[in-house]
Image (cartoon, rainbow, N blue to C red; front, side, top):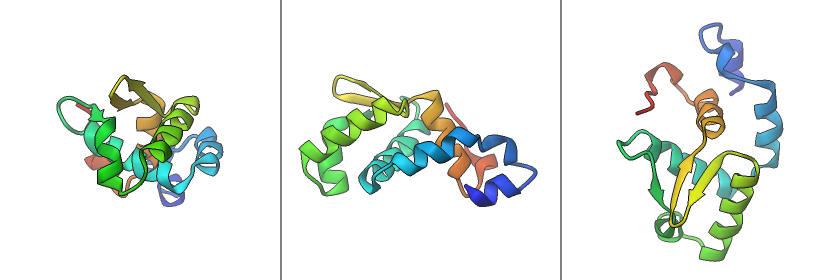
Length: 106
């Protein structure tokens, strides 16, 4: 994110409030955000929450707590067993992307 903030081509992608959000994230929440960001590049833009414990090799209860926290931070929008990045979550991940220009939201 710091590199993107310093690059004039991408500095408008990095909003000051993203820094506070990143400070509040737990490592598992970062992994969930990465998982959701990859899903966002697919045609459905949603992911199956029940697949996260196996995919991330962690307890379902830890996933549940992290999903709730990400929703509270307005990064993720859970819809039953499906999850999806919010616009804020997408922009946060875009600000952190190695090559923001290559990211296309479907």
